[in-house]
Amino acid sequence: MGRASGAPAGDIEPPSQPSGEPPPAPTLRALLERLQPALLEVVSAPRGLDLPVSDPLLLDVSEPLPPADGVVVLALGVDSDRGRVSVVRQAADAGAVAVVVKLPGAAGDDLRAAAEDAGVALLAVPQELAWGHLYTLLLTAAVRPAPESAGLSEAPLGDLFALANAVAAVVGGATTIEDPGNHVVAYSNLEHPIDA
Image (cartoon, rainbow, N blue to C red; front, top):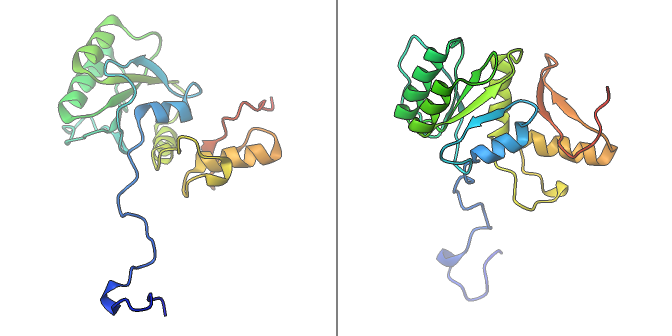
């Protein structure tokens, strides 16, 4: 059974399986589309947004940044423009794609110039957003890129944003997915009105 007639046993082809290649890395653009404009503001993107990203990295300012190819650095506890400029430069040296900061107002010229010179995207989040919450959202959004033209029934396994969109399409309204602590980990973005 399972063998074509006349084919030797060694020539049996196994059932089709995934190629074993990991899916392509999501891009910074894909992360922003899933989370922006509600969470992330692009302050500067000198190399554009079509750069592959990996997991977010929580910065510990007391330690040097490890090699961080493609990561999005979350600049926790960095509350001065001088400190932010330093983080942007360190992130560039480590290979990061972007740095996320909290700004009390508009980004200063020195900070923008540092991001441009370093070739690192600079993103800002609201002051009131918890870093742990942002980390979870970025990690979830970066799990797998959304397929280019997939319908809702083709949502990739593990993509909570696609699941939220699928539920929103069925119920006809905005949808959030929350963890047991009632923190939003994914939400729909199908242009449904949000209850006030």
